[in-house]
Amino acid sequence: MLEFLPALLTLSGMHLLMAMLPGPNTVVVTWLSATTSRRDGLRAAAGVVVASLLWVVLSLVGFGSILLEAGWLYRILRLIGAAYLIYVGIRMFRAGWSGPTVDPTSTRPAFAGRRPMTAGLLTTLSNPKSAVFWTSAFLVAVPPHAPAWFYALVVAVIAVQSALWYGAVALLFSTGFAKQHYLRLARRLDLLAGAVMIGLGLKLVDEVRRELSIKAVS
Image 1: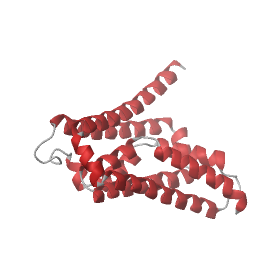
Image 2: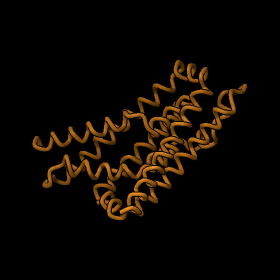
Image 3: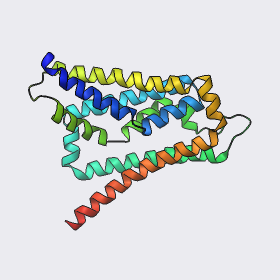
Image 4: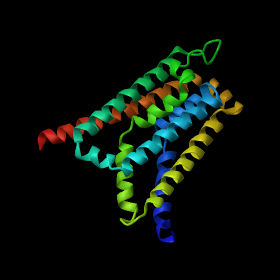
């Protein structure tokens, strides 16, 4: 088992760095925790964890390689993901644009209160680059002769790390202190969160556009 420890630590570190970088997963969990409730934030975090594990498992069975080989499928999935991120961003942006009301949570988009786990799940699934990332990570970090139990251990480690990190984010931003300060800046923070989500969606669209331009030239 010790011979596989470096590979496990490498994958663990890569996952933690990827999770900690500001992205749509963090935005959704933070936003729902601060604007609705701790329960909704934790539900969104659970959705992120489930979707993250799904991408890891899919990469283990070769889905990431299929995406790279079938370029058109990879592009379509990214465009669908981009559309979802832009949709969520617009909803957040509209919530901020509406401004504060007597009830600070009354302008929250409908999906936030009713389906927080789905919001987390779809946000993570909207990025098929995760499957490609994990496929590359496994090729680089894992020895070819790694046994099945090692891959099962990797999935378990990623599950625990995802749950701890996004759970901590949900707990932090659902505290009374965080919610109080969030509500003081609610409009600007909603506009910022919406702009980030829209920007991430447009970035995916631009990546696909550039790939198609390069393909057309070649």
